[in-house]
Length: 279
Image (tube, rainbow, N blue to C red; front, side, top):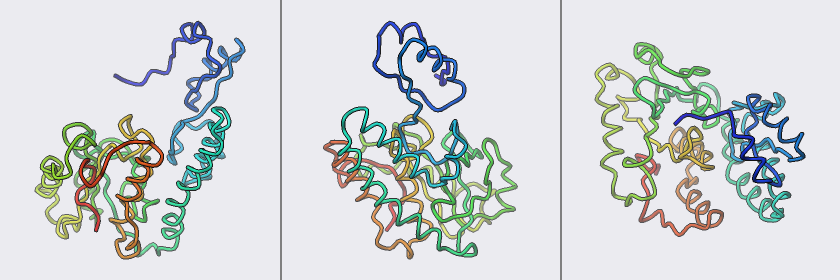
């Protein structure tokens, strides 16, 4: 099922909501006008961390490449609306405390020390989605920066990435329902990439620097919910293991689940999300 940009306004009006949340896309401007003319406030918010800038109504928000300021602003707004201002501030402090040190360290990395990265989406072979790869935020150089969709395999060879990141689908391959040791399917994804004949002379394959990350931890697609920031944390650890020696992505993931989602999930026992786990 694709995304619909035509909400059923008559049904919404019949429910008499106090407020309606809509994505910050110009395609929903007509819906906003109708709601507000009926006296129903419409709040334009992604309600998730998304530094891609896609769909943003306010171009000035694109000046925040990390997305932290925009996200914190939206969280404070939600905290005010739902009378959870203290809870919102608690999460903002934790979130920024996890992300800011990574972003600041990445800013100090010389360009010549940043690995070249090919990011392949979960939608198929030889497909990329630069807006949601977050390679630059993680300390790498995206060999297909600004591109999305099909790419030429020969171009991958020519640009010779040091690292390949492949996004794995949610469901049978990755997810919270799997036991920690159930890595056979996610391992197959890495092995498939390693075995592609056309990539045998690429640096990433020669060095074995191929990493698989679940779509549960990326920002593109509904499976990620609001966990997309974990993608940057894992990628930074993979790209620069020495610089981020003390960084523990799994511990941050665990605290997010336990402290802020109220979920009784022990990541030492349940869940497969990346391969290999960063050491």
